Picture (cartoon, rainbow, N blue to C red):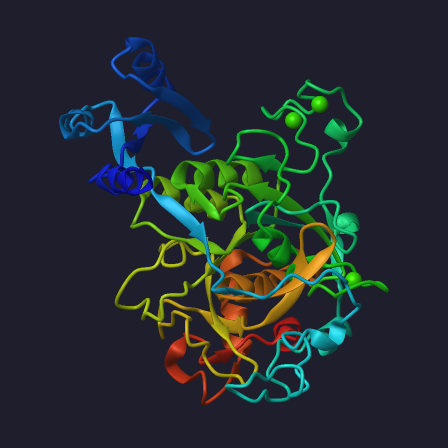
Length: 418
Ligand SMILES: [Ca+2]
Ligand SMILES: [Ca+2]
Ligand SMILES: [Ca+2]
């Protein structure tokens, strides 16, 4: 019986994606499609950057018809997307206060080694020198678009962005009239509810790298002062879709964030996702993206969303504690902008716990935090200026050489001094 079930599952995998996203040229065209009953399942998404609908079909003729419809701008697949860690250590039950484990912030050479590679002192983002200049600002808002965030975590809770109108409002009522009922801490576009609690750990880990509270507990974030907006579109298994990603970006824009931290990837070029990131750029929001964990050259094989050609994107590769490119990390002397620590990174996970994880997923929030520090010091910096400063002030190293445009690793202190 069991074998039969497995076989039928394997054979029933669709040859092509059954879910599509249509962008209509007008809201009117969308409304008329919704009322036409031509689609078996269709749901609308009226976003700030266009009128979209999601629908399902296995029939290619339907797609071809839609593509030639003058009211339709484009039809794209609702591609699957996923979180970008490669390795997760055993869970730790006891949270021991441990800045000393955070080699990404301060590499002593002892806290960064492994049995394969000894660590190297100073191969870090130089956080302590940066903190002499700024430790962040509570006005800076960073969206962690991921598997959600444990907003109750003992080492994060004071740095979570709270929607005061909803916190003090009525349950079941959209108190701030932003289209989302009871979005006190953010939103879950995976389940379609207002609770972005993390059941996976990945999003909470990224949030801790950016903004774990500086106190007597656990670890320290790159920023001491920041507001983190938890947005969940990846499920508790770390999987999501283009639909969830574009809704997340739309929501983050509407909440007025300064930075979006994106430790996920997958899919091919997708015009709807491109439009979403472009809308974020037009709103002056920096879009930090993990370069990917496929060991590939992003200059020759595109990895998305890191490779979209939008000016606000900062693509981040991962380095290890010896200052070398992490074996899994994507690279590219043109398409990857900078490198940051991404191997055996110790940070927060759900239920007040801590874990080490590796991936360009972990390098990405280090840079999101540095961008947050830069904006704390000078709020008028544009996304392009921030990207240029990060590339130009990176510490060039032989080991990172031509793996990125910066030829080296991000240095928070240098970035703040320019
Ligand atoms: Ca609301
Ligand atoms: Ca409410
Ligand atoms: Ca702490």
